[in-house]
Length: 186
Image (cartoon, rainbow, N blue to C red; front, side):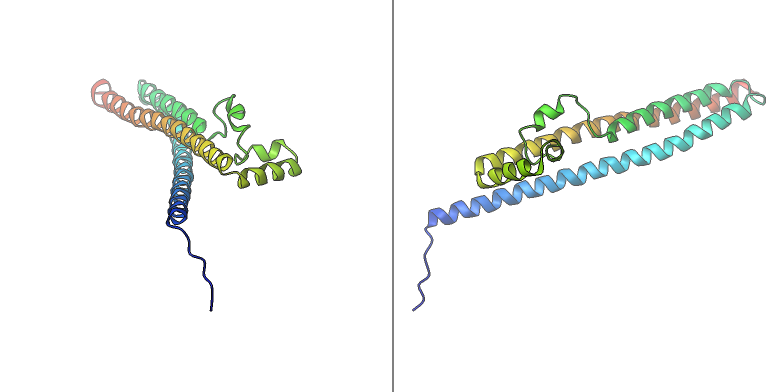
């Protein structure tokens, strides 16, 4: 007869709780990584669009000065908003935001910068130690999620500023251009 060990209900509850916790952490991490990728894609779009608009603004400024003397106002508003939007878009995609960031990640073996600062043998030993200690594992995952959350907050805050600058710059540029054409050049 086959002897199958019966698990206690207490152990079964702990396993189910651990599985749910693992799934929650994995899902949260996946969502953070996806949102970081989305923010970077949005920033790249802003970089391309504003580079094109900046080129158009410079061309407009240099070619239209003789025909319409006040068009430089619209072109300057457009170029200024594009330059500021480019600045904030670039800030959102640059790799690090804080200088003290490395101190926060020094104790986290899962953070990507840790592997480049210590030898392979030390990294492997620390990672193995972390994987065998549930408290260290939970702390490393928590630190990683905290880092992702801060990164997302910063990226989206900078992108929000860039989008507002872009929107208001286009609006003000078009309104000033219409004003120049309709009122001043009559």
